[in-house]
Length: 231
Image 1 (tube, rainbow, N blue to C red):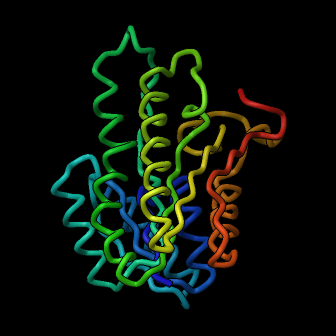
Image 2: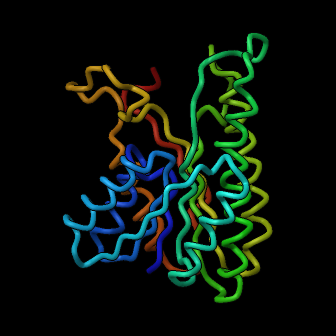
Image 3: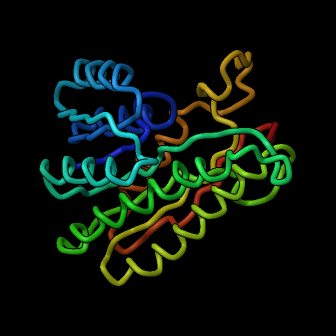
């Protein structure tokens, strides 16, 4: 299969890319940091030689970059799976917003919105495909200190629901993931030796599992939280 994973130089995106590469799929990566992305691509290619890894440094908050990345992806064949994982987080509530909302909307919503609109028509032509949108539990309820981030993820959830509605007649699946705390760079410095929060591989394995069920079934939403609850 041809698999696209955005925001894939580290964290959840890297774990998802590794999970698909481990099964021998062709995986296309993108991230803003070219050095980290190149290092990740080489690492995955060496670790999983039966897979083919392609990559392109891309800032998905820039519309023209999204178009260039979509063209790059389509040069390598029709995508079977698109994992919209790219995003960013800034703390802050709605009333003390210091211009964080618009950058987060670009990274957390418009990146997926514009890329999907360029990739989905090719999936429609082949009458199959699966789109995974990585949202957050912040899309499910408000919480202290995260108003702008929460708004961007609520918007992502709205996009996912409408995308699911529009694509189901074309046999294309849409799955939205709502992870709680995951041990990524966002939690740098946190002592997770006791396993208090989830691993990025937990999210990756759920995506892999959902991608394998029968064509007539779809997992629409997945909520994943640390076993001991949110922090």
